[in-house]
Amino acid sequence: MKNRADCRETDDGSYVITGGRPLYGEVEIMSAKNSLLPLIACSVMTEGEVFLSRCEPTSDAENMLGILRSLGGICRFENGGIYIDGRPISGCEVGCGPAGKLRSSVFILGPLIARLRRAEICYPGGCEIGPRPIDLHISGLRALGADVREDGGRVLCDGRNLRGGRVELPFPSVGATENLMMAAARAPGHTVILGAAAEPEIADLQNFINACGGKVRGAGSRRIEVDGVSSLHGASFDPSGDRIAAGTYLIAGAMCGGEVTVRGVDSSHLCRLTEKLRAAGARVTERTDGVTVSGDGELHSPGKVETGPYPGFPTDLQSPVTALCACAKGTSYIIENLFENRFRAAQQLIKMGADITVCGRAATVRGRRLYGADVKAEDLRGGAALVLAALEAEGRSVVSGLSHIRRGYYDFAGRLASLGADITVCNKIT
Ligand code: UD1
Image (cartoon, rainbow, N blue to C red; front, side, top):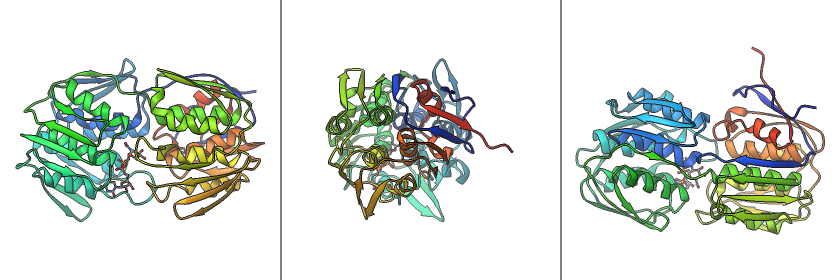
């Protein structure tokens, strides 16, 4: 019986999963993808070498580094982290190829304007989870004095008049808050961002900018203040552990039964999830640097799960938790308040026997026994949800569409196999 993924994952490959095995063991959680992406972009603004620790080459991280390289930056994975030297960067244009590969390419706008006072990028790509406008990024940068124009799928920014200012975000957009913090970090004067996002990744960005000599405060609250400095130096920085990856492994542990521990993540970042896991009947033990979930896999509905900006239930764990509800006794209600297409995985879960009715932003999930099927990941977290369902389901499943999953989970099959899952990677023979 195979208990290790036996070949390297590729975008064209599939996971072959035979469900029904309990999971036992520990997963070491690495730096949060959603912290790393803005931190990589922010490195453009520094005059020195940056080291970001505990990093894995997920495809989103690789693509973000690809953008930096296309601008002249020097980046390499080494010593378990990423070294970035942004000093040689002189380019300010990000073409449609690199920008289209990930939504987070938009993070380069703020740093490029701050450093070179000019930026031109194609509209960002990313997950198919509904319209992802960048109007808040653009209006915020304008409030800081940047002249921003949109022209045929490109965003053109002239930052010669960049200066501190007051921005009031009508919605606490994570990306817009981050872009504005970065632009303001090197804009002369004082900036106040009101209605800011409060996710832990915002605190990471604040701490990184400050480690590089910047002056940012207020992360974690709705009011962030920045005093612009004329230059930033390099720094070595340890971002927070990935709360979404950690949450995914915990949900897998609760669904399959056994005992799974995630280490290297702040348990307080996971409290909305652990509350739901307990409500579903799993045992949860929290420590400062990790969480353990255990049980026999016999779950009942956690009731209502409603996503919201931090400290609300994370939208990125909505699909994985929907998979849990699909096999938990009773009826669960899921309300998605952030991204309207985030129920795409439901159609695929239905192929596995799930009873899910989606109506706009709400889904009703009646727990059933799931069975194996051939399913396709259509977005990152929805793809993870399919893998979790397949681990729990009776029989064999094939999950394709790994390009989506590999954006945010590195060696997903290997880690699950090390917990005892029967999962192998099947690559397409070309
Ligand atoms: C980030 C995360 C993503 C997570 C999301 C919400 C990264 C790399 N990605 O995405 O994993 O799901 O936060 O926690 O950190 N909006 C606008 N106009 C804008 C910007 C956003 O209308 O200019 C809307 C979006 O369409 C969405 C909502 O605001 O409905 C939240 O988006 P936002 O917080 O910006 O998410 P991202 O930064 O894209």
